[in-house]
Length: 212
Image (cartoon, rainbow, N blue to C red; front, side, top):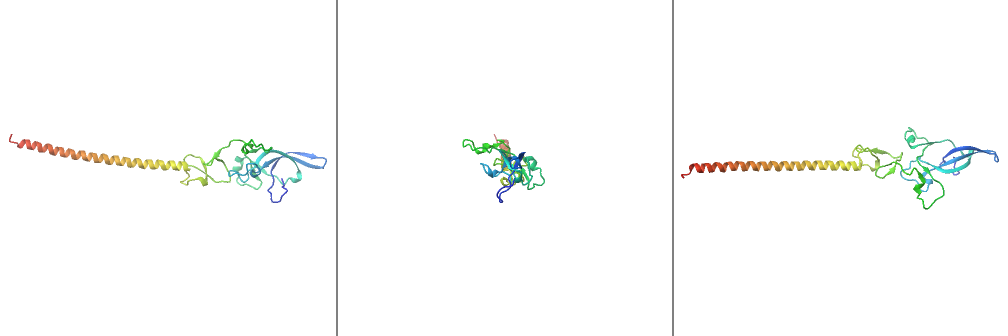
């Protein structure tokens, strides 16, 4: 839909039906408006995509003369499969209640569905404009700026890996120390055994040479 201001991006609406206005001799359209994130009470958040819009419950009558052109509103899954995102491509994953403001209702409660899948350590919904990487260990998805780039390991998995490696080396050191102690102990026993044999030999010789 064509905006009144030249520096404003076009409005997006879904045409519900055509209505003839006999009084003014023109065609009207009943539309259901889409809202951009910045047009809602919540405002634009970091996880909102550049081409993301919300289907509202705000209906209106507009002249067909205000129609600027046709656009396509995809689901998020359809949008992610696009090889090329054109100027007239948008996506919608939420519906927005644009009714009168109720101070007792949180702004976030105006969106449906209430729960969506979240990603990364920031627990935000997926933003298709942000590059994400998958952890090779836990297979979870993380925002690239939140990664510890040790291959493609998340911070949690990389930390656990470091702990396992550190524990592995510690066990080796302990094992080596035990082995060294065992070797030293066996060496002492060997010396005691040799000394004992020597003492026994001396006693035998002494008894053999004794005049008594």
